[in-house]
Length: 218
Figure 1 (cartoon, helix red, strand yellow):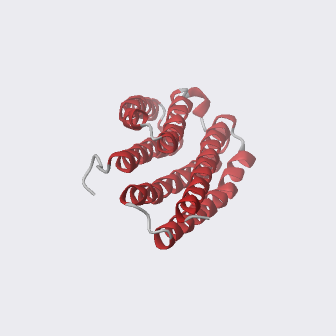
Figure 2 (figure 1 turned 45 degrees about the horizontal axis):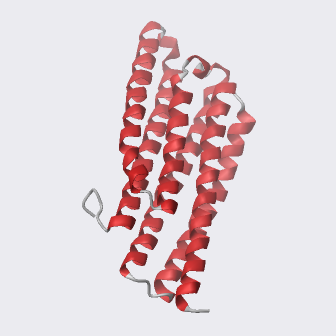
Figure 3 (figure 1 turned 45 degrees about the vertical axis):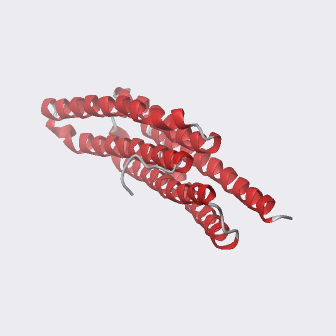
């Protein structure tokens, strides 16, 4: 097997594991928001437990990338691809952590989560989940347009963030006894906003992998 064929085989495995890691994260976000809406604490605990699977995939991909860098002596363009993958899995792992944190808060909220009245939280979760998926797909398909579109999508996330925070602030003023629950929901909203930020980071590393130029200074 030639060095190039072996390299492409190993890179394909990295791609496949990235897609798998993204799928696990997508499910984690969906599950933690469903647990929040339905007050399903078993499902929330499932998200916490499955975070270990995401962490393992991060380690596996990292080891594969480092092996390629050390053993295959990649060209400059290949080096960018592997470097981008290493950066992306860091963002993906942090997204997994934030889904874990949302699940933990859900358990603490108890039976009075009130999230079922805040339709914007699930809507926000749906958008950031798609952003993560688009970021990884942009990397796999070398889709620069899709990678750059994440900034515009994040504008919707930021708008929902402002609306939710305003609604929760109004809730606290109207019913001070709800303050503790509302603050927890604010934390969940902040975690979702951070997931959107990590998705943007992924898009920026995709741009670096394709063009050799990062939108921000490295």
